[in-house]
Image (cartoon, rainbow, N blue to C red; front, side, top):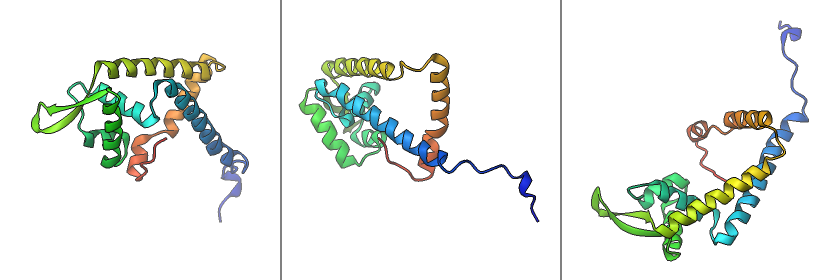
Length: 162
């Protein structure tokens, strides 16, 4: 026979469902803000993430690596890369490590736009959390790191991204 008094009391039923809902509401709020930040630049969220990945790859980025970085199908990554190339933000070039392969490289315009978008995103994010004091921000960041464990998501087979 077990000692029921030794067991911790279960959390209130109303608390648990609220946390995921609040996380989803926060994610939707961030997404709306992100889309609004990108709109004047003519970029979609996928394009902005792709441009950031290409800019970060000093030697260029293969489309297959872009697909892996964005967690999308290679065909979708090709479409995103085509859009960035049509906008003059990236170019396709021979891979210096394998001349048969092609890599994406950011143009000067692409690097400038990525930097401007990142500044605008940082300003918007700062405004969004401005109502939190430093201690609350640190605590929120700590808690979100616990919840947003990408390695655990990948191990569980979850590949969905916002």
